[in-house]
Image (cartoon, helix red, strand yellow):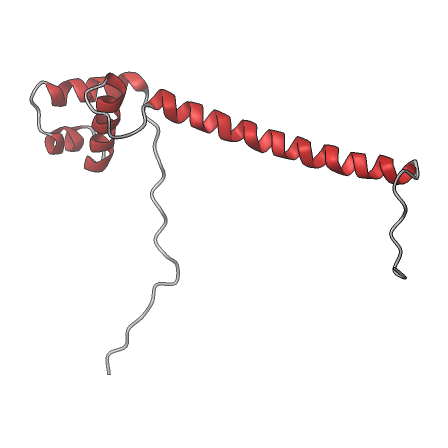
Length: 115
């Protein structure tokens, strides 16, 4: 009887590699000069999808395409999201501090269970 075995562990996820901007620029120059995406990706040991993503983002950043956010816009959105999280945390802290001070100065009657 054949049995189906599951692996003890799932295969590790591939680590996301970071490539310097100059390296990306040179890869894109090669592709734009006529080299195939597939051949260039193989030559530099980069996934084809990574190169496609770089091309798409470069098209957005340079204005050749307008169907997505530029790098600057994405960075601004990320910065604003961080700022919103900061402000929400500050608001929460101030709200708790105001409630504590109000209780300490008897400006707000203490909650009782017999109401």
